[in-house]
Length: 248
Image (cartoon, rainbow, N blue to C red; front, side, top):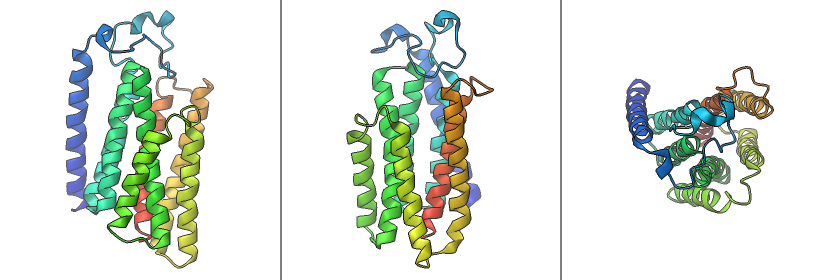
């Protein structure tokens, strides 16, 4: 599928999911959401006065909720552009992450937090599996099967032990991805992947800087600190996956 057509389909899908989320949150009564505690989330966008303005509002964190759509948009574009089984795995994992993180930032519930973390780990775990399998010469259908297994394992079994060390596990996955790519390049794999991998590394680096500034309360746009994390990591995921795909 051409890039223009893929972009059109991805934009349409993203708009549809935005509309469904918008209707979902505006149709929910906060008092009826299981485990809902007003302003209990870690990402206090507006530093509301005693959280009084957020007691009966969903989504509780609008910016952080809707910027998650970037995960769906970027990965849908990659999946529709490449139209390969590994790209579809990325698309499905990113869709799950998009919905899970949106529900977490929309409700600030414990169960929403589990969905957010498991989705994030599933995405990065799938890409790490893809990079390592390419390096080892794993062929289809085992390559795609390995991605699915690692994505499910990462999302379901690593979310609890790493729920307070999210950045650490993401960093481990990225070391595996870039390490496998570097070894592959040294063995003569497609060097056209280099610009994509470098671009993704820079984007992830900026995202990590903003994450830490936001956590410390030093980001100049308090409402948008974590939102920028969503936007940048979504872009980084698309770039690093495309770069990895070029190594096949």
